[in-house]
Structure formats: structure tokens, C-alpha cells
Image (cartoon, rainbow, N blue to C red; front, side, top):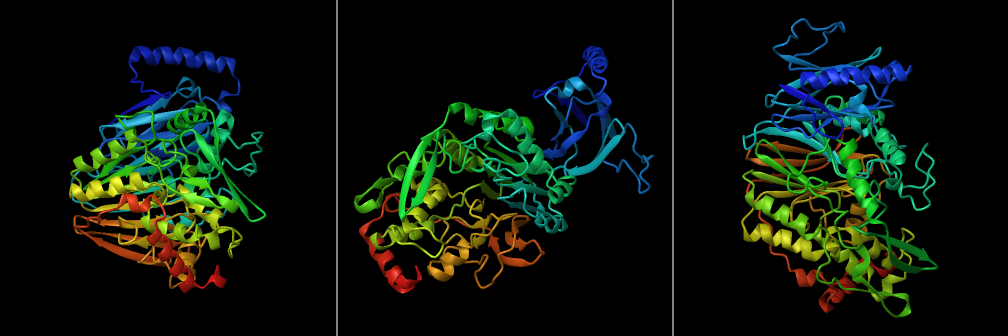
Length: 556
């Protein structure tokens, strides 16, 4: 087992460098009489785990001094004393100094670890100590039975008790799909902001505070003491709500009229977002695009592809065109993509080259291709400016949905058809963003999809409304409000059973099963017609009209 500390870079410590560090440390201590009152204010958290490596990060209020001890044996016994079985052969002790955390982030990169092994850590600084553990992953392409949990949309001021239920599942790792607290909100709880446009990423102090708040959600903090985590931002913890690579979509509804605009923002905000992501979070590094957020990792015979569906996309609303009488036309132009060409090429090539039995795409945005049916109804002339039961108009709902995968048919079609043409089987989607949960077996979504997007967030009831009110089947294996009245906070649970199957489930914060589906080996998607999904055809209008008649106009 090997470790190094770093200051946003790898530092392999030689004896000479250690002596230099000791001198610098002494100087800092002499200049700062408060050095021994330093406190770790966020973390530690462990991520970027593989079969042989892991990364640990924590944030301190000041540069800090202490040591961390890591062992495959419990470091403390039941009485809280040092375990005598922990020795130099099965553990390593690393000292860290103020110079290691001048930016208040201390990083440890562990390598040469044993695969599929629990490691215990003990951090000591001043008069304080922190303990925890993590488990390395099995060797790549080895048959493995394991469980992971995931979800998105965690309002920091909500009750995060869903993580109590999650911890009882004993996941091998946890994935947060984004909207991990909402620092773009003007009224970010307890953190007053002077940014009129909520561009928190423009202020390094606000960025730091956002990570401190995330890592200190009380029940999530307990989970992360023993569970590795992975994460990529979505929109509300990115630049701004519904942002793309260089703009954000600004929607307004006034007097029944929907206005849609794309507002540009400086390129520096995207740069700040990506740099802070790598600075504060123990992220996997994509060797082909090390400055980006998207990446992949292996767990046994399963490969995960975590994509960034926000910061490389085309503007959401460029498919909407003004029409007469304050209405809108919809037509997707060529080049309108949710992933830019570099990210899409990386994803397709990686999927094709993967030797894994299961390929799981982690997407902050809902994938289901059949959401297009809802847009077709909402953009009927009779519905566009009609006030719906949720208080919005049809046009506003349609524009709000423009952030989803279906609104980018060129990208969605390329992905689905590429997998079909290259016989890349067993691809499934884990998605978030829409503040509710549901499962589709691939018939409607394109790929089997488990959507779980209300870890600690008010439920939109979207899956229920679509199924029960609009009579449109998008989530054919169940969901919140589908044959139940369960709209509680929930999370996604995925169990992989070697090469045989994957069981995907939605679990609520009271540990009750909402819905579940078992995916067997062999799934291939059906062909996707990009042109048909790129506009509202006459046939789409006819089907939407009859759907409207079947629903009953009065119910809209």
C-alpha cells in the first residue's frame, strides 16, 4: 500500500522534500499561533475508488497538521484504543503538514491497495480524531455480485433521512447524479449571496461553502464515513438552472404567455465549475479529457459511464420558434446535441471497446425517449396557452421539458442506434433531475432506465401525472404514484448478480419498496428514428389530438 499527499497535484515525498516541509511547517507555526485550533470542517470523503487505488479529501478551516493511518485491520478496538494487531506490515501512517493544505483542501492518493478489501482509516490532528472506512472494488472483468445506490436532487435544508434508509442497504458505493444542494438559488439557506444572477461559481468563497454544506448533510455524512462516492454536477449545482455550454434558458410565464430566451454567460463560469469540481471532490480522471467531468470506472464485470449532460450541451430552447398568437413551433435543427462531439465520441468508443457484461450510463438528466409524446400534446394549439392543473401552460411545460434527452434526438438516436448496430447489449440508464422516481424496461425509454430524482426534494409527481392523468405509458415497471400513493423521498438501488441479471428498485425513506424490475442478460435497443423525433409531424399531431380527446379536454 502506498500513499501520497497533494496540493491539487501529486507529490511523492522524498526525505529531502520532507525536511524542507518540516522547515516550512515550523515557519508557518511560528507565524500563526492559532495553528493548533485548526478544524476539519468537511469530510473526509473517499472517491475515485478502483481495485487498487482510492482518493481521500477533506476541507479544513485553516492549513492543518496531523496524520492519517490506513489499514486493512480495524485501527481502533471496541474500547476506542489502538488495535495492537495493526502494525507496519498491514498499515501505513502518513503525516500531513500545513503546506499540504494551503488551499484548505488536503488530498491523499492511495495506491497499491488489495482488491475487494475493506480499509479502515484514522485521522488525528490537534486534539481531534476521525475514523471511517472504505472498500476497494473487485478486479476489472471479474464476475461480481454487488449493490450500489444513487439519486439526485438534495435540497440542503430538507430532511435528509433518506440516507438513513440507504445506509441500511449497505451499498458498495453511492452515486449522486447532481443537484446536490442548490447553491444557484438566490436564498441559499444560511449562505447569503450578492450574486443577483445566482452565479455562485463566480465566487470562490461561495463554491467552497457549497461543498462544505454538501459534505455536512447529517445523515449523508454518516453514509460517506463508510461508503465511497461518485458525483457529477447537474444544472442547479452547476452554473445556473437549465444551463448549457455558454448560455442558460430563461423561461417566464405571465398572463398565460410563455417567453423563452437564452442568456449568455462568461466562459469563465464553466471553467470555474470544472476546476472547483476537481479541487473539492475526489473525482475520477478521464485520461483523454482530464479537465472535464465525464469519466468511466469499472466494478467487476460492470462498467459505468458517468456523463456530463449540462456543460457541453447545445442551448435547450434553440428548437423553439415564435409563431402567431403568442404560440411556439418546435423543430430540432441538425447539430442540436446534449453531448458535444468530443464527449459523444468518447462515450460511443468506450461502449464499443468495453469488455464488461453490463454497461451502466449515469445521467443527471432523464433519458426516456417517449417524453416526446407529452411535448406533442402540450404544443397542440388548443393546449399551448391553456392553464393546466399545475398552474402552467402547455407551452411552458413543453419548454421546461426541453432539457431532457428526448429534446436532443440527434444525440439520443446516435447512442441508441450505435448500440443496436454494434450489438452492444446490456446497456441501462440511471437518471435523475425530475424530482420523482420510476422504472421502464426499455420499451418506452429506449434503454432500461431507473429514474430516481428526489433524495430530499418535493415530489413533482410527474410519473403519476403522465400515467394516470395523461394516460401515457412512460414507466411501464412502476413508479411513484403508479398503482400507489407513495411520493416520499426515495433513492435508486441497483443489484448486479454476476452475468445473470440486474435488479433495479426504487426505495422510499421508510425503506419501503416502491417498484422493482429485473433486467436479464441480452437486452438490445430497438432502432430509433431521428427524423421522426426531430419535429412534430402531422401524424404526431393526429395522435396527440386523439390522446387529448381520450384524456378529456376538461382534465387539462
